[in-house]
Image 1 (cartoon, rainbow, N blue to C red):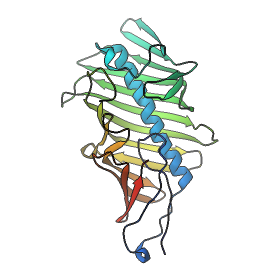
Image 2: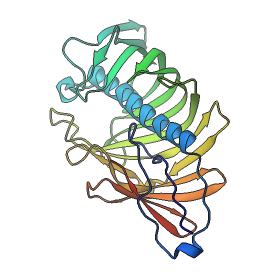
Image 3: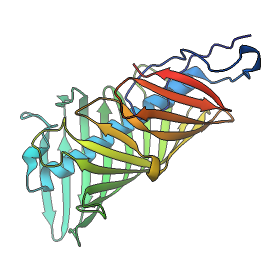
Image 4: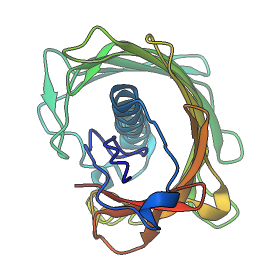
Length: 278
């Protein structure tokens, strides 16, 4: 008997509905694998929402504190508004998107984000970020976390290390979620080109998503198998491996070899499930 399973991708893409398109192996030997479709969809949404909102946090800091803010045009000319306050060695930066602001990457945000930090020491700065009634494409975020901004890592690149504890009220749903974990983003290309769409990032970390339904999922990306985002090639992750633990199942989601083909392979118990990310 062939078992057809439909579910949403585990990944950092924002709101990408996916479905199983084929199985590899003899039909009679394929084990029954049950995945909770709705909960998996929500956890994938949480990944996309957090990836997008944390990119806003990083971009806001770089926009204000980098000597060449023109290299970060994700923000428009009319929004947001910026309130920069210095008290001694302490700085607070309030980014206000109200009533609504469409970013250059077409995401719509509202509310505020507060960044608080001290002096830059040896090219490193510790930042506390807080979402204040902040919405990302209609999803409400509260909470925040810590960000370590590194002007030059061992590879000579800028890097941000985020630790987050964020609650999400999903749009058009009574389900809520909580994301806790760490995420490192190394900016490997496009840092001073003057546009955002040639930026290339290596991303890795580990995070846990818990939904109000009781569902839990842990995702881990090792630094050696980092997720690759290359905005000049694709709006999706194009390579890297994410290890997923959910529903008493452990699997590996492989995003490919760098080709923008919209396909990732989810492998469970040696069975490969090609996933259409489009």
